[in-house]
Image (cartoon, rainbow, N blue to C red; front, side, top):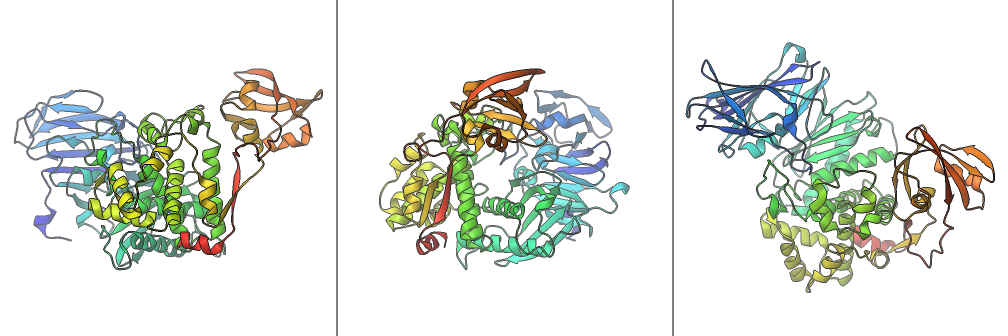
Length: 592
């Protein structure tokens, strides 16, 4: 425990308590030691790293303000701002409650088993005092007697279970350090001398914590050495992984010194399990992705994010770089860390290529436009998303691949060196696309403006096959699966349901629509029940004509459907490919 003076509350101080577990309510008391006249406060409408207006204020209730013994009036200015009719300079206390019923990593959750919150969901911003030191007390109750607390905030006066006082340099840091409360497993390791902590909630007794620690340490050491070499100093003094295991779920959110992660409970490593499951590999990819963000987006970041505006959308065209390039390196660093082999890496890369090729929206929207439109398109996906937009994660990763393989083929530099040079040039701070172009010109000896114009600012196809072939990888066209052949995206759990109908496909021409339940097919006068698309081959044989029997809005419809014949793969661009190694020496030079 620190000295009493250091433990004193700051001029902006919060006290948060898990007050009613069954009602999912946190209570918050905010004390402003020196408020301004007509002090304004607000709650963020979004959380950095997740580009959607989430309206966190919808969960705030019972807001009251007092000075001394007297309640003071407050006026709501808009959906997330309030003004207090207070006396300047006299301590102001606000009390309110927040309903926490969002299981994701982006907001807040509270029930009888676990609590979690981001400060952007609970902590009102005191306008004019954002740059001051903030303190936070996390209080326990009788109902949380067995719980502990974990956060990346600086502890200044806490008990052995972590309840007590924490400090943040400013409001930005306060809301960039989520808090976990409950009963959880904790493990520790050092990566390149830096202390790291892993907490896991929701695990089963079969969970192999030591394997997760060992594999995560390899990821962290590989990333630190990627950015700083064998002896370089990382920008963080400690790091916290907060992993919550659920029945079904997946996601992550990066922070400067920690990350909040969600995975399926079955994806955790298990004792006496000799081979990594596909789900565990997915978890390692998530860990690698969010940890790489420690550098690429939390520090090295778009110039538009130099200072966050929490009241509205913050637009940038560079998410293809910050999310896409991170997606390129998350898998590549797993390979370099020895956690996956060449075949697994190529399978994951092939999956990304197929995802892009099977997205009609890639011919309509550039990846720079997709970055700018993230607020209204990527985070608000619907039945037309695949037809109208492209993923800046997926295409951005493949732009990184093309850039890296082009640089390696020309022999003067690599994308690794470009990333490190960007870090040095910006001192780990904001950058623009012009900074990237300038460094490419310097390190590669020629401008790359034309390539970036084609790959990033147009809808031209990426030169994947040629670049992969030059590095020992063959890209081979494969016969499309039934979903690709029909132009559909479906779910096949407890029946066959259509999620999306892709533009220009056979399903669209037949009149199938998102939301339809595909019950069966009628072929040559006979009707058959189907539950999976693969069953089509059983009833169709070598024919191409059938009638789809679908349910829509309580009606049963018969829709004549003409299947396209298998295309001549030499005459048509493929939408399904596979990758295989043809030159292991060349492949090894790329993968490091």
